[in-house]
Structure formats: structure tokens, C-alpha cells
Image (cartoon, rainbow over all chains, first blue to last red):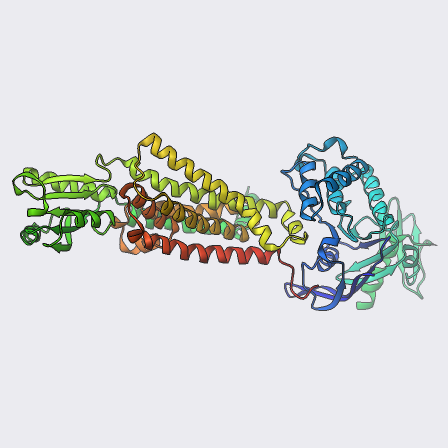
Length: 271
Length: 352
């Protein structure tokens, strides 16, 4: 199984990842979630061999068997969609005929058929991310690393993108994607929550939800004097540690509540 | 408005390049124009040949010392003839050669003054001197008989164009890849760092070669600039020079994050090359304090080579120095640039 074990990475003297272990099984989507600066991109870069590990190991297939979509989509802005595909295909040693067949298939699925001759820079944000995904998937890699493929993408394109990602996993690839959208992460087989370079929680989304200590409760008004309350829609959610009285009515937290509660619990511990 | 001014100063303080440009550029301009901007060559290197060489030497030595142009007798050889004198001019050892007695083919045993016209400003100073001597001497201007500025400029402009493509265009091409985030993508593709670097640079090298041929042919055709020397020597010299300037371009791209930064730095390297390479202001007329900077710049040596080969038909025996210096510069700059670029795209050690 691909992944990383006890990975510690330092960037510019600061610890960017600390003892991070992630398993990326084939045929499944593993989602890495976490706020800005949590270490999501660093984890991907470590798996790609772009940053050196101070400790720990990474287990990945050889470079030609990895597909990678960077945060910036990795699309060449002054090449057309077709030329982007041709370049990446030949860089991975694919035959011209192989590139044509595979590209026709992928671009049709991604809905990019009609824009084959459009320049990368003229694509909409969603289209560019979908093309970036197609480029990463072109050579049918064994491990697919996607860095926030859906950030800045409109809801409809996000749905299409997610369909492409699950298809890639179904066809046997091990997919590791980072995301800031927790509804997306909820659909992954496994969620890895990162916080300040450490693993906050990991497991099936439903299992992660079960790891919350204390109580999450919901009320229509902010319970005064609480610094453990956050707003969702019109209601106020509060996390209360074990042994204290929770305001409002207790609920089963979803992934978003879970991650906030876990972060608060971690802060409580280190306080 | 105060908030705006404070914000602007804060931003400016963090933009080290612009601050450097604001401080360094005026100083650079002042120093360069103050010490280097001088078209008047006031010392001419002179060779005297022929059996009356000693008498001529005497006359030159007795010339008034307060004259605007002084003569530096670098070679006095009674045994040598016209052939050797012309060789010395071709090899840029002297600016002026005086053929005396039997070496001179002028009527009445008058000395003949040969002037190197490829050294435009030295030749102009020499012409003034010769004119003062009137009928007492015969004179001939070699290599650029009409003292055409274009003849001297075209070989230098070829170098300037190669510098432009090599430095600015190459650095922009590379930085654009970094800006678009695709350099990172290239780094994780199964391409060796060497093939990425060479694949990225080769198109610019070929385009610059094409431009070099085009500009040379156009210069010869439009301005009637002669091409007297070996095209092979010229081509080899130009290719080596191109490696040096491409290296500067790659080097700039490794220290720049955006196209704007790359252009800024590239212009800062081009300006001194234009002003101090001898293509506009003659190196001989510069104060020694800034002249040495000129000798550290690749364009200086290419201008020497291209003017020598094209105008004077100079060969390997006198052009080896520019070729050797350019080779050393190319190896150094290109080497450092490729190492730095490779480091950007090579995998981190120990990670895999």
C-alpha cells in the first residue's frame, strides 16, 4: 500500500509535518483535510519527492507511475488543450495513438471535447482544473496525487470533478487528494485530518466522527461566555468537554463539526 | 493620502530589487557616464617600420607633448616592411602604422601612415593628426576607408541582439514556467533535469543562431559591411558567446519569481554591457577605473571578435584571446546557471 509512515518534514527550520502516517490504498479515494498551513501540500510534495524527509519513509510507485495535479492545475497557459495533452503524454512516453485514444476518452468524460483548441489560459477555472486532472490521469497512474483540485471551482464543475476522481479510483488507482471542502471529504473512503503538521484524526469519515470527546450541541442563540462556539447557517454549535454541561441540544456531529471539535479539544489539551 | 504613502513605502521597502535599482542605477549611470562616456581617444598606439624608422621615431618623440593626441610608439622596427605593419593593424596591436623609407610605396620617399579604420574613434583622432601633417605624408585608412559608423556598429549590434535574446527572452521563458506553476509539474514528470534544462534552452539557442545569421546578412547587405574573415571562427565565437548570455538568462530566471523581476534584473545586466563593452564608447577612451568592468562583460569580447573578423579579417592568431575568454565565461556562467536550475527541479535528496 502506498503512503507515508512517521513522516517528519522541516521547511526553513520549522516543522511542517510531524510523525505523519497516511495509507493510500488502491481503488479508493483518501482525502486530506485541514486548514491553510496544516501541511496538506507539504505532505503531497513529500510523497512526490520534492521535499526531503527528516525522518520517516514514503512508499510510492516510481515517478512514471505517479500522476500529479498541483494546486495551480499544472496546465500550460500558452498551449491549447490538445497540445497540453500531447506534451504530457509524450513526456510520459506514451505513443501518439495511445495519447489520442486516452485523451479522447478522458476529455469527453470531463466535458472538454469542445474546447480542444482553446488555450489553457482561456479556460474557465473549473475547466482548467478538469484539464489538470485529465493531464494527471493521462498515463493511467497507479498513484494519483491531487492538490485541492476543487478549490475555486463552481459547484457544478465540482460535481463533475468528483465523478472523475471516483472513476479514477474505481479503475484501480490509489487517489490522495487534499481539500478544504468537508462535504467532499465526507465522500472519500478515508479522511486524514491535519492540523499544524500533525494528524488530528484519520479513518473512515463515520469513524472519525465517533472520535470526538465530549459533546457537540446546537442552539439557536449563542450561549454566552463560550469560546468553543461556532456558527453554522442560522444556528450555533458548541463543543463541551467531558464532565461539563453542554448548552442547547446535543447532536451527532458531522465531519465539519467533528474537525472543529477535535481542533478545540487539541487546543484544550495543549493549554 | 498619508495611509497610501505609508503603504507604498512599506511595500517598496520589501521590494529589494526596486530599491537596489533606485539606489544603484543612478550611481551606476553617474559613474559610467562620468568616466566612460568619452568618444575622444587621446593616445594612439603606433608602429614604425622601414629603414628610416629611427628618424621617424625621433620626429615623433620631438612632437609637442601638449598636443590633444599623444602617440605611444609601441613598436619601432627598421627591418620590418609594409606586410608586417599591416599584420599588426589587423591583429589590433596598434592603431596606426607608419611606413618609412623603403617600406613606403609613396612617391618621393614620403612616409605612409596606415590607420586602422575599424577602431573608429582612434582612426578619427589619427586622421586629424595626419591632416595636420599635410603633404609631408601619404595616408591610407584600412578596413573602413570612409570611417562609416555603421560598419563598426553592425558587428557590435549582432552581439547586442544575441545578448537580448539570450538574457531577456530566455529568462522570461523560464520564469513564465515558474509563474504558471508548471516548472513544478515538469519536475515531477519522468524527465531528467538535464533534458528539461536542455529542452527548455535549445529553442532559444536555435532562434538566436537564426537571428545572428539574419542580422549578419542584413548588415552586410543593407550597410555594405564587409565580412573579410573566417565565417567558421565567427560562428564558433558567436555560439560560445551565446552560451554565456543564455547562461546569464537562466541564472536570472533562477533568482526571479515573476516576469517583471526577470526583466528588471535582465535590464540591469544589459545596461552596463551596452555602455561598457566598447560598442558605443571606445574602451581606450575610458578611465581605467571603469574599463576593467568592461573586460568582465561577455559583450566586450564578442565585439572585439566580430569587429576583428568581419572588418579586419583577423584570424585565430589574434582572436584566440576573445575566444578563450568567452569560453571561460560561458563555462562558468552556464555551468552555475544549469546547476542552480537543476537544483530547482531535481528531487529532494533522501525523500524517496
